[in-house]
Length: 279
Image (tube, rainbow, N blue to C red; front, side, top):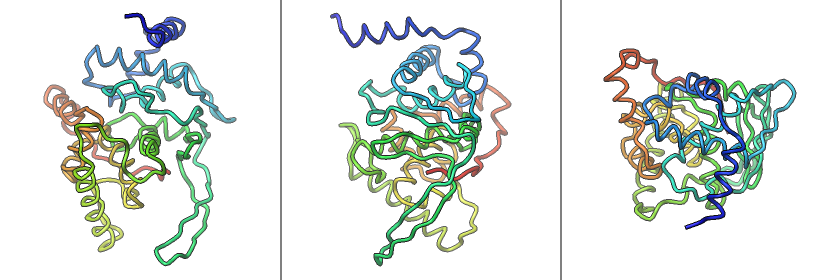
């Protein structure tokens, strides 16, 4: 059956072909795509082109973007959606602003006693409700490996979270998922993680301690690790990994384990590193 939406999609893809050399450069710079099938990579490329058509990248002075740079960002943005139906998951924003470095952002928090705290915080990324996504370009460039850091996935996980309103760690779940299962897995892990840091603020944690900030950051950080260090996340919080696998309909851990089995370079890869503060 003829579909206007499908016709428009194909028209956009035909008008913006990706050169083989450009795509090879993107794959070279994004090891976390290793192990995807040719069909998955083809779908990912198409979705990245459509992402760039629908979202405006505003590069501030000091950020120079080549075609491969734009695709590098878009591919990471679309990786979490690779096996989800095309339901406009990234609705509610049209712009990604790229800063040449980390930026200072005013912060405001009301504590349990009602006292409001205000301060300036340095961030490498922010996602605003019904507003743009802001990314520090060095953070984007540092993303894409199996090292537990991915600024793009982190900030766009916030946008998925915001589909239900304010970010609270609960994105719209699929019909085969239960909110009670999600809440039990996430809240239990979040509480244990905070208890660990309360007992020893300098503890070596399995994932970035920024995840302890609030449930929204816990979802964003664990989403980041789900794709970029799935072994660390699964070891630390297996129930969280299981819920994210149901939500994203992917199993990056199986893909990484297959790579480790077949490629010696993956067997002794560096463990996750906590690189920068996101938003």
